[in-house]
Amino acid sequence: MQATVIGAGLAGSEAAWQLARRGVGVTLREMKPRKMSPAHSSEYFAELVCSNSLRGAGLENAVGLLKEELRRLDSLILAAADETRVEAGGALAVDRHGFARRVTEAIRSHPNITVEEGEVTALPEEGEVLVATGPLTSDALADHLLARTGGQALHFFDAAAPLVSFESIDMDKAWFASRYDKGTADYINCALSREEYLAFWQELCGAQEAEVHGFEDKQVFEGCMPVEVMARRGEDTLRYGPLKPRGLRDPRTGREPYAVVQLRRDNAAGTIYNLVGFQTHLKFGEQKRVFSMIPALAGAEFVRCGVMHRNTYLDSPRLLNRYYQLRSEPRITFAGQMTGVEGYVESAASGFLAGVELARRMAGEPPVDFPRETALGALGLYVSDESISSFQPMNINFGIITPLDHRVKGKRNKNQEISARSLAIIDQLRERIL
Image 1 (cartoon, helix red, strand yellow):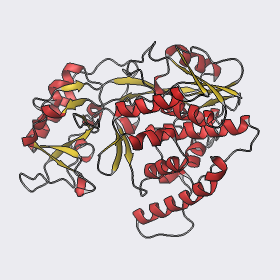
Image 2 (image 1 turned 90 degrees about the vertical axis):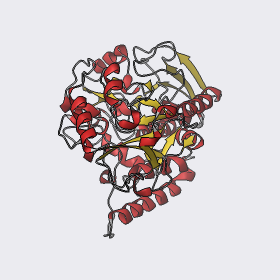
Image 3 (image 1 turned 60 degrees about the horizontal axis):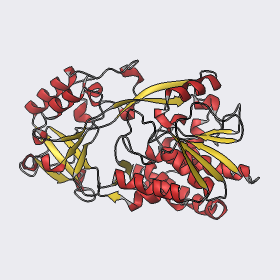
Image 4 (image 1 turned 135 degrees about the vertical axis):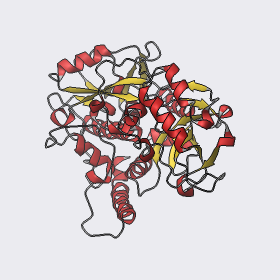
């Protein structure tokens, strides 16, 4: 049994791994390092372009449930994340370089996987193919896919946050804490007074953006909105978003500040921190100028500026089935953000499901058919739901998972019960899947 996987990001790496461990010979096609996208800088697979956080870890969060499902089903991406974890309060964050290196080593050392470097400009005309080229699909392949799917693809843009060195942060004007003191004190909190905030907000609204062809506010996916776009929506928008002060008390005053910028550790050594929620496509000089107006970052060393990059995704409800197969040509499977799942964990989850179901088809086995009661199943059923008329990328959330058949008092308790039900199903499926 042989299959071709195109793209070695989170989804492609996970899919290749699941196929290979089930006896399928995999040819993994990856254009790096021969050709790099505008947002990539590392030769490693599964490179994290934006944040280093895989988001909430608790089972009261839908993404926490999805991670636990993948963990119990022996996901490569979750194993690598757990091994390279850095402290981030109630979230699962990783040392991005250690994480990518761990995934790459596992993929390259598997005897059933052959890596072929170089750009793919067209799909193979025969054989099983799994496409996971992600939001940064090259122009040539994107044009090929557009033609192959009858032009049924959409485009939008993502933004990545800047990174600063820890030693350059003025800790006399910042402090370590997690919101509401939840978990350990893993975030650096940079307070702004009302006057400081208003000056910062005004400069941010008027700062010069890098040129991005076709970019408009209405096309930006809300979950990855550039901070300057958010700022232009109103004076207090940031204070109810990434700069909200709720649950954070400045130890110097004992009070909640007017606004707070949070920084999260970006590597295991704790030498680099990212500005949480500060995805941006401002010009590099403008980023340094405006973000240095945050008092604790007045002398900050920006080791990476934020970047804006294209994100391409399919009109999946019209094109794909619940196994991420192309309805018009079932030998072609897609996975990752190009299917309309949004987020690192969701991308890995789609690669897991697509890889497992493809391996079973190739072996003549029946599909697993992950049910909507599981986060894995709910994602696949969401992107293939033909009743959706205006399709947009979606993070995993409890709203797309089958609700309980009884009432539970309290949202947190309800979500935990949904998670318990989902994991019981996963445990029943585990022996059959592994």
